Length: 181
Image (cartoon, rainbow, N blue to C red):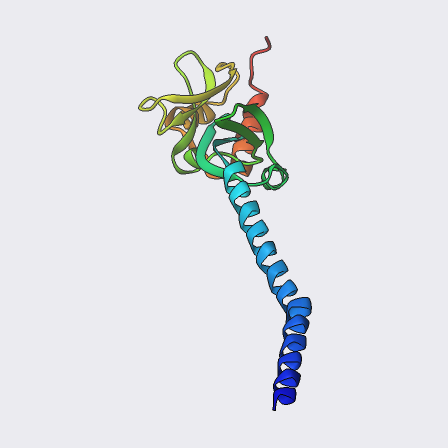
C-alpha cells in the first residue's frame, strides 16, 4: 500500500509541476498584463487635458458666430484631425481658437437682414428694415443722382436678404452706382 501511496503522491507532484509550468505562468502573465493595462489607463487619464475650444465662423456678410465647447484631449493627433478643416488662430494651455470661412451669409442675415441705404448714401445691410434698425455692414457710397427713383425707393424700404444668391445679386446690381474713391 505504501507503494501505491508513493505512486499517487508522485503523480500528484507531476501534475502540480505540469500545472505550474504551463497554466499558472499564463494566468500570472495575464494578470500582469491586466495590471500593466490598468497602469496605462491611469497614465492616459493623467495625461488627458481639457481645454476650451472657440470655433469662429466668418460669413460672407462679415458676421462672425462663435461656438464654445469643452474638449478633453486624449491624443493630440486625434484632436488636430477633428479640426483639420479649421484654421488655428490662437492657442494657450487652457484655450484653442479656430476659425473657418463660411461660403454663405449668416443665419442672422437670412432671418432679419435688409439691404438699404444709410443717411449718408452708403449701401448697407441692416438688422431689420432700414431707418428702424442698426447697420450690420456697410459696403460703398452710392451716387444717388444716378439711381432710378424706384431703385432709390426700394433701398429706402429695404431689400430682404434671404440667400447668398440674393446677397450677391444686390451687391452686383448696385456696384455700378458706386461713387469712385
